[in-house]
Length: 69
Image (cartoon, rainbow, N blue to C red; front, side, top):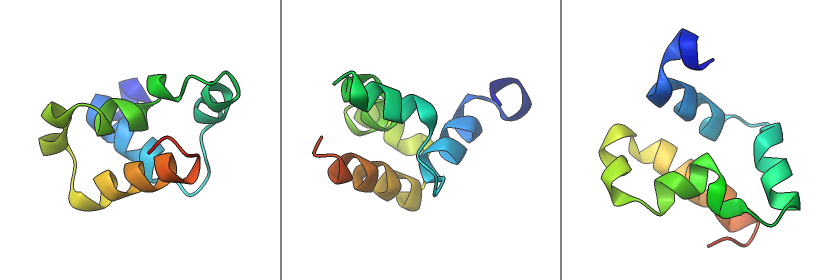
């Protein structure tokens, strides 16, 4: 996916997917949500300009859904 779409678009696709990616689930099981793409975006405002408001909202919603924020 990274080679096909590039970093930003691959991230956007994973974050906005209706299905929770396997990596997110695994990191949740390991209590390491801080390592998810969603947390990386949420916790680092320098990444905000790379994504539209809907993508940022999807990040927050996924993180809120598992109690990260």
